Image (cartoon, rainbow, N blue to C red):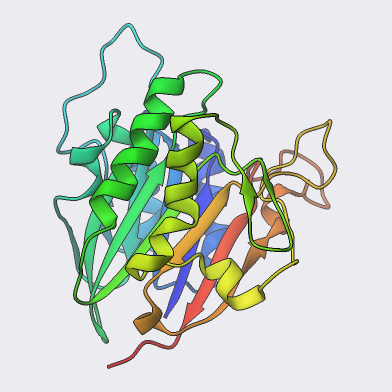
Length: 263
């Protein structure tokens, strides 16, 4: 089973089609897209269906729209080649419900609950970021039978160290909430798959600022051990300018995870 996760950076309709075409070359069974412009959800649905990912759940169809005076125009999508349906989960536990979706995918290995989230940036709204992190942990740090995946752009951490510790962006309660998600969910069968597969001190950034050459690892995939994660890494080609010139597909690297699930 293959899962690809990508922050699409509120792409235009034309770039959305190119993004899905690139995603399809990795033959994913499940795709999670975050920072989707709410006006482009239909474009993504059509392109994903054409790529064989015809079962699509988005985060805005079942929740009230954000207030018109806000600039909140980002959503998330989970798509699958197998039947999937939205379920209660993260949206009910986070402040900005349109930035989270929970779906159950009917895979050949049984039901897989996929949670996708786009965490607000703390510099623009500390309360929303803290509430999202705390809501994620509270929703997922519970007993659960079956397969689970949590993925998306968490906008955290600021730094990771070879001994497994992290430096969050926030302080106090915010720092604790970031730590609880990034390290605490492992105790509830949602370990960081990148670290589980690659260990320490492996380091890659998924988003790079002009001032920081090694970037920040903001994009994550956490997965139940029963899914048998075998590979997990970043696809930096999505950040590269095409050889023929033009715009790169995103300002984030995609993530690809390969699983060998138990029965």
